[in-house]
Length: 139
Length: 140
Image (cartoon, rainbow over all chains, first blue to last red; front, side, top):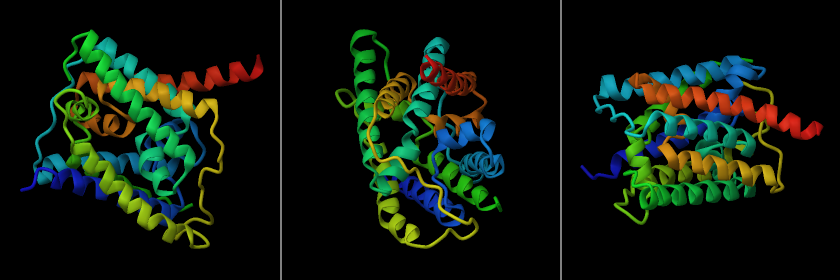
């Protein structure tokens, strides 16, 4: 099987998920927004159902379809915690993450989402480059 | 508001993230590592997703209303501002440090790894902190 068939299929499913949420509830499938809104927002019901579904989808992949579970990150916990803190801060400040700006925003041809996506992709690349080059952390 | 369609959407999203390899931080870091042993998988994930949303979004938003809600809730902001850029910069750095963004991190809670739990707790702390910082800056 072509090595890129699964990534492509997964990507199409992500797109279809976002389009179904837009068509049915009129909402943007931005995970950082849904996650924060499930704790802090009004209308928590649909957000909890979405997150429950997210976990069910993962169970389907690994327990029914049988795709192996990925290995745990080898990064030390302090680095993981720093990463999580920055991701939480940044996604709320910038109003979205890979899904809200990347998948949904680009689909809406939103200039804000295009700028945000280019920015976080570039910073991701630079960060990995610095980690590899100067700190010897293997990706 | 009826909420059940969100469950279907969540299942599709969870399937997409795990089937595509996005829930594997090593693959994500491999994709961002363009000067090293580059792993191109995520081009196909993002490409597949964005082709679908580019084609279908205009058809959906041309409707007067969604199927089971009274109106579309779309972001209304158009202008670029410092919050958008600053937020994307911080998010990109955080993403590059671990290879986790919010969706993959949340679905990875299934795997029962200590690192994904730590990541998610820190992410929620970061989100809460952002609210505090914003209101502090707004009032000072």
